[in-house]
Image (cartoon, rainbow, N blue to C red; front, side):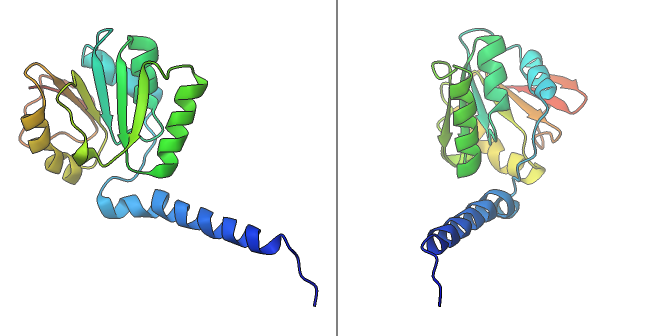
Length: 174
């Protein structure tokens, strides 16, 4: 019998990639927030409608590959903080932020969005499903300071009245 010394490490690598893929692709369907890439134009428009100013702090809950963070830091001069539970997306966004030289203004924590402290947020962006938005609403109300803005894409926050509505973008003020 012929053995190949490289076979076992390759198989373990394939297995590890399969597990990461399952967690990254299939797992989010069970938590209510699958990753759907947001167009950069939508991220830019969300931040424009929220009237983000240089020096403000923008949180992106469920930050995916970091598009909102990149636009907020690069084009608006904001401090951008992302929360992403998916380890693969967290790695992708951290890499993009580093490659673009934005580490001084943008960062991503691998965290559950319900565990993130939002007290210093000026703007919070979310691109989540309705069920997740509804679960998130009490946290936003209790932690955000008066005047903070919440911006959603596609799905509004139930029972909240937006101050600005533009297509699928909803802006709320606390």
